Length: 186
Image (cartoon, rainbow, N blue to C red; front, side, top):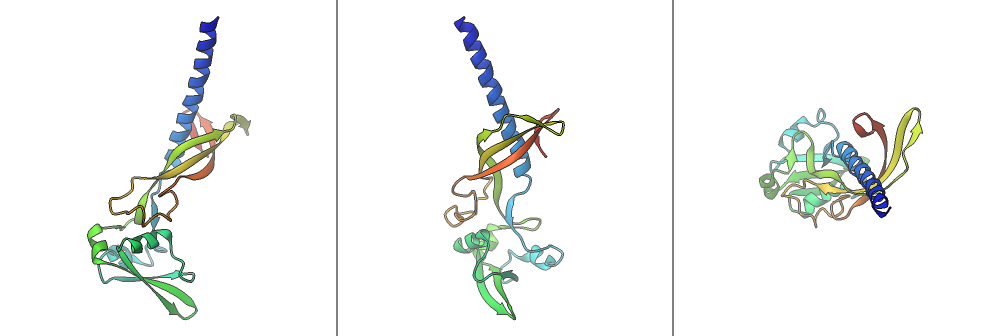
């Protein structure tokens, strides 16, 4: 009798662990598609900047609100990889960005994506709803935390601490759909 109970409990636990691992795999597939980066508005409008921004002496001007800049730009400045000077151009406030010699050596600028500081990765699956039918599909809502991984060597985590996921995990939720290949995002 006790053996049957233990086997049943063990089987239930394994099924739960399988879902958790499947959820993590599906969520990672979705959230790690694009690295976390700072980039200029569009490559078409700033092709020269995209090609040569990490070279010393190349200035790029970007619109900002007051002195508020992206946490990635803030981290680049704190690390000594770029200089930022604020200017007023008519009614717009702009930040003039230029790479330092240290920044040029670090090669922080990727011509395709910009300055990328890592990719989002599931840290922990917190909870999920019991899978239910919705429009003929099995769906579940999963709560999880994520953090940055694949962080480049030039990133000083203290300087980039205001970037979400750099120093502590962030909470998120996602809806997953059961497919013939396991769980997937909608």
